[in-house]
Length: 487
Image (cartoon, rainbow, N blue to C red; front, side, top):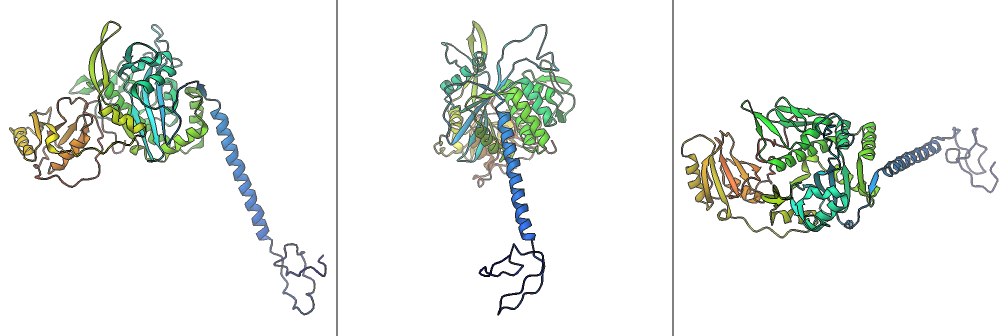
């Protein structure tokens, strides 16, 4: 009950008003009209606070659960890792340990078991906070380098024979790549991840196989790969395609395999990022706990940062690159071996990029600095000679000319590693334009122009700069474009 000295409030303003008509108003004030007290505001306030508390409880429980699952991941003690900065480089290693591999005797042959582990795949996952960019840089397993902690050189994947520490030391000391964190995935983990997202669709221009890895794709077009076939695809080193009724081997070797891996990773990344089903997400976490190893310094915030960086990007915009190399022959263990060595200065530009070093401005490219091979893909007699003469007008240096292998409806410009800018300039001089493709097999020229039936002549001056054309394929029958409609 209100006392006389308490300020009088009408029922609709007094939260403590009883559920009855109010007492008579003080003298001199008209009595208010009768009304029931409105309690909906208080109930709404209480309900809102309860809902907020429940949300905090759920979020907190999810974070605690995440931390608990994260603590179960096996960690390796790796020293000498670079301190975290504005960029993060995570060395992702695919171990070819045969332990627990199912479904393929080629991977786990009981009569001739393969013991130990080797690094079958090495990639740098690069996230740049300042530039808001992400990149995956592949390191060829046949790259010939001095092995850290030894007095000899060998293929870089052999550094993993002695464990992750030696591989990390070799990459940091001999390549100069700063490694902030380490992640290792084995065969079983790879298969399980693919299966957990429901498999991955890839494109093949022809039936493909690899008798040693177990790959067997019987028809051209979109192929749906489960975990087993995906592993066989990614690991294939004896890749063959059916052409003209005969099986043809992939001439690009390990570099072609890297391109297939990158194409597959882009597709799997696109599918994994689209996963919203909490059951599938939890399944992915469980797979990571069983089959993934990380360095002891990697924290939950590091993983969340890396995941958010890649999740915020369209999978098709994540740059995929391979350290530029050149083949050469050496002797390893008294035997002749075909290996790769870094091609400089092209390789250093990629190393600088993942290390966060701002590259100097590139010098302006001129036609005089471009060596062109002209190939006739139309079948018309004398076409290569005519185009060569036309290209000499703006100043292009014609290295040689000849016939292309087959007929082409669209003009192509194949370019050597590090010659993308030169290919783009040549493209701007063609009336009909051209499709750009990367060709690591080019050695003595910068670009190879394959004339198609759409060729319409050479401009006197280069066309205005168009949006950057990103190559989608590497020359070689084994490497399809990375973006195929409907696949």
